[in-house]
Length: 186
Image 1 (tube, rainbow, N blue to C red):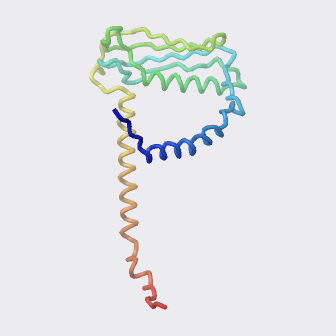
Image 2: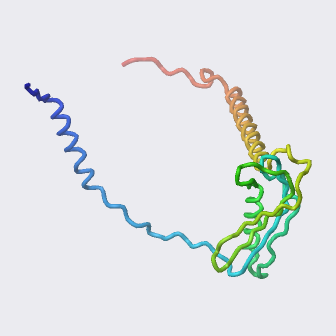
């Protein structure tokens, strides 16, 4: 068996190697970031919030019926408590409460959040207050918020499209505003 060598393939491979090799060799090694990321402020005191929530038959939170916000912050450091309150409220609206097998029980539940300043961990606890309720078939709060956000985004996009269409319809004809160019040749 005789092996044939294709001359153009060798030329192509050699030119690629000659082109790429200096670029690869000249690429500097990645360097460490010049600045480290800031460490978030972790308050040196415990915080606690709790919410009473209605859970539907899918395990979604339908609404927050009541809640107690963190009030343990010193007078000159209210921002950590406000942030903790907002984060835990947002988290409780998005959570699901289900059994390990995936089933859910309609009811009124108490959800608590406890921040430990020693470990910087937040523990979330869930306890059932009462079973049943007339909100079992209602849509979950997070799903409702997403549906509304999508509808608003769609309405905004349609308005933008209508505004753009109005603007393009209100423009004068290009041939009427641009004078014809002279057509003399040297």
